[in-house]
Image (cartoon, rainbow, N blue to C red; front, side, top):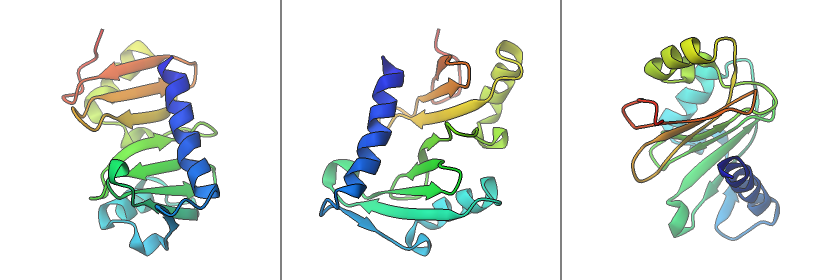
Length: 146
């Protein structure tokens, strides 16, 4: 169920852009928060930014979303911290996955690729989706929630 919800959230974000909602505006990449720019340049150095948008609605708290040429989307909070990394046509760079989560994945799902990471706004918990369809949930301290 959560997989469907996450997919719908990503689609709503991009659909909102297509509909030219007054709260969603195209922005140049250099207007993405500095931390977000560094994340894109560091973890996706060979990819080009296709589009960047800012959602000014109150419930989205000035989030920005960057679409890359490999169809990956990265959503950032107002300070540039990643909130959603959706790489379903590729994979999330493993070095972007928090270290403790990497260790758990290498033991429990060796060889699997992370295609989605999402961080909860309220508690910082992280949801990971693997290329085999497995969905895992971690606390904000990166402990697996069973």
